[in-house]
Image 1: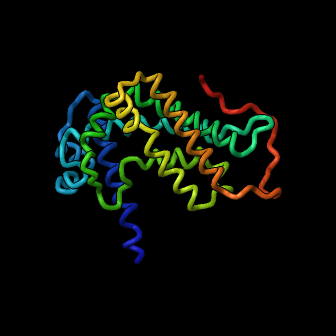
Image 2: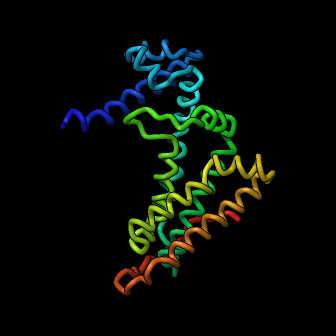
Image 3: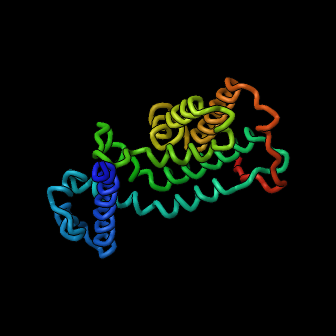
Length: 228
């Protein structure tokens, strides 16, 4: 049983080793093949091809992985921001969700070509066993954003809210709004923010009213800054 539980962790480490090796080779000015990356990571070539069937997928994933520190730092700032003076849990969750959307929107516009390639390469939905599928970070960020209303909504409603938000927040949704609806990035962002807020309000309206014990007093500190 112990070895069975360890497998997903081992797969994550193997994948991370391959991506790290690819990043090092790219930093040296090379365009490595999957075979070269496997050798650099000291992973069998057969295993490397199981994780990354094509050179393109490996290089794109490696580039995307390189964005992690920048994005995680921005998201950490959103999660750490306290409630503003007089904000209840719903207002606080809305502010955090809006700030999360702004970070994600800027990320997509800055790296649109890379993300469109990721979308194309993963369109079939195939995943490596034991490795988190594409979109996992989005789920984590949105879950953290609406955490202030998690107890009020309950586990089932909160899960439904995250699923609904995943369908309208992120690069997939932005590309639909731009490619199919012809919206500008600014128009798409405005619509995404409206949809996310509407979903949160709708889910809160479904939940029972909070009891007095669930109402918490918050320090009078600045709210998450939202751009217009």
